[in-house]
Image (cartoon, rainbow, N blue to C red; front, side):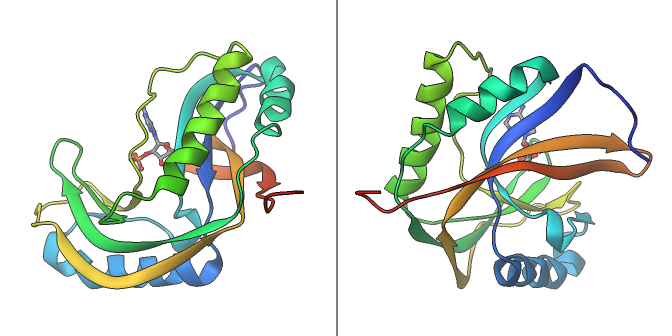
Length: 182
Ligand code: 2AM
């Protein structure tokens, strides 16, 4: 049961992978669970955060949606080919080894539109990763994984809804990425 809070929403922009990518990432997490231990993320929650906004007045969501609709970036694909670990927050995550300019272009375009519209957020730094396991017991060396290709055709606005069972993600809106010239 969602815990009702009508005036504010905890929101973030993200890339939401297709089911096959989610399943492949979840299998990877399952494979590593006995090695590093921790809490495995459900397959259908796996995502890459583009921009975390945190608590926002619901009254501002229409402007937020309108502003996000101004982002114009063509579709692209990239590859997740590393499993890495952060010791400070005990997270295991999948990430691209090489920098993916199109990913930064999308995250930056979003930031710039939101700043221009007067939105403020704390965390400007985009750090491309998909969290697979939390509360990891054993932090391992960063390592190569079988490459997972992710075709990016859209980005989404997500609300993190607190429930009795923890956070649940609800996609509020999806914006397709359109090829140049559209
Ligand atoms: P994480 O997986 O690295 O914890 C929903 O919580 C999403 O927002 C997750 O992808 C989470 O990243 C990210 N997130 C939560 N708090 C954040 C913060 N303060 N700054 C950036 N991203 C955050």
